[in-house]
Image (tube, one colour):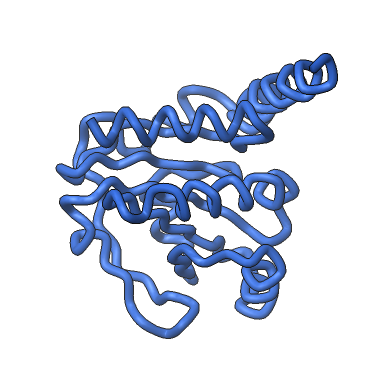
Amino acid sequence: MVFRGVVRALGAFLILLSALWLEPQPGAVARGAPTVGAPAPGFALKNFDGTALVLKDLVGKVVILNFWASWCPLCRVEMPILERMWTAYKERDVVIVGINSAQDTWSDARAFLRTHKVTYANVRDETGRVAATYGVVAMPTTYFIGRDGRIQERFVGAFVGDVGDEELGKRIEVLLR
């Protein structure tokens, strides 16, 4: 019981630390990034299976966009939680879309997805335009988009451990209401 409390406290600390460490300055992130309540900027990107994913086709579903890279240590820690959430919520019209960084290679990204047994949709932002449009300056960055296609929240940092699992689940539940 004590160990679980320590793990939860450590998880909360890591979430806070990652958010503080990764968020350079509020003004730098806000400039150019879409704001809460605004329509999510559209895009069409290629999945790792070669098919296209078009964001506007997902209107009517809760969408979680997670910007990641294979070289990002916090992304490695967060992936299993995203996979668990995908498994738990996919039957409830929740879609998780991983958006791989232009700074990655196709082969590194594919190996990363295979190693982490990721089954939710993942696309490649080859030019970096989508990340720029969303004002992504640190990995991981996650956007929560409501069924209406509008941004409900932006989170810079990783969802880590039991606390991260709980927090991500809470955010999804709010969007499903």
